[in-house]
Image 1 (cartoon, each protein chain N blue to C red):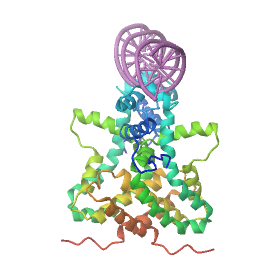
Image 2 (tube, helix red, strand yellow):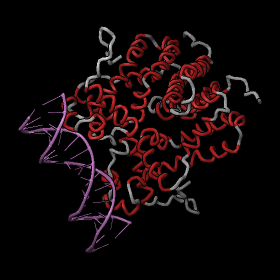
Image 3 (cartoon, each protein chain N blue to C red):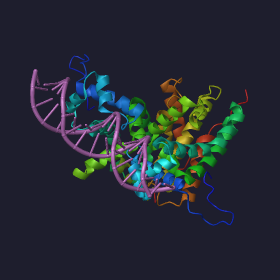
Length: 206
Length: 206
DNA sequence: GTCTATATAGGGATAGAC
DNA sequence: GTCTATCCCTATATAGAC
């Protein structure tokens, strides 16, 4: 979705150099970590040199930032939708959101892994950006919503717990379910999440 | 447990320099990341110099490794207990293990955060060790158990999902529940996990 | 057990030719 | 848009005095 890589006639154009850099960087950042990945590593795999990268990105940070923003974009509509509701409705909307999240995590597992395996690096880059422009990150927005004391603790734990379960099964548990067709895995996971979220009566309206 | 830091009369001896290094390193590794933390950072906070650290640890890696081994030790008895059972019994034993896990994560949140925020660094250090001695890591052992095709997929997903929920709520969701007494949070979490794990009939014996 | 001084390597980043 | 060459810095790690 961030990459409109189809032309009008549906043919696959070769990806721009910039795009190839991002692909390679994503793979390396996930498997080696951001800090351990040098620009030389990326350049070599691209078949070019360090200096060439600087035409496309001013700093190494910017590569990580752009990748993070793609994850950010994925959660954005969901968070905005959530923000328009008030607390009671947020609880009710949650199961639907998790349901969509499952598909998104499956389709973008690498971006999720990038985020959780390079938590500190991402955080540091975001801090740098925030010092210049006071933009709000998706993570902060998300936390603010889940922190709300207006939502019963029981529900908050279930909301965060369901999120942990989804990420745990689909991202962290990589290889654990490698033999299972992804659709079947998703189906099982949805059942588990339903049990987590539906096991209490609907939130009282008062 | 690696640290027998109580004397016969119960008084608190001052922690050894080695122990202080580990404490400081743990804090820094969690908050800045392993790679971004230089030996100078650790030495400064300790009030000494870089070179002094090399008396206590041969390499920077070894500090991370020792911290990781403490997490390793925590899960060890549980894993060994699990290994002695056969597949059907493993499913039945799971709820009890998760219950103990909740207490352990609470008591050692920093070690858990160290592990998940420095996933790649830990993995690389372990690989180095494995190339010399062919010892099996707790993580590998754990995966091998959860991968078993003899356990129904439904159960495997619930097992991994419960683990993700616990870690998600107690570690990742740091700050989210900062206002909540930890005992109350644990109680709520146990309820959620019960709903996840108990929502199916016991596994059939054939 | 801790220090100063140093060896050595590799990183990110820039200048300027092509 | 990509190259070569280079600058500069910081990191780990070691040597050897105290």
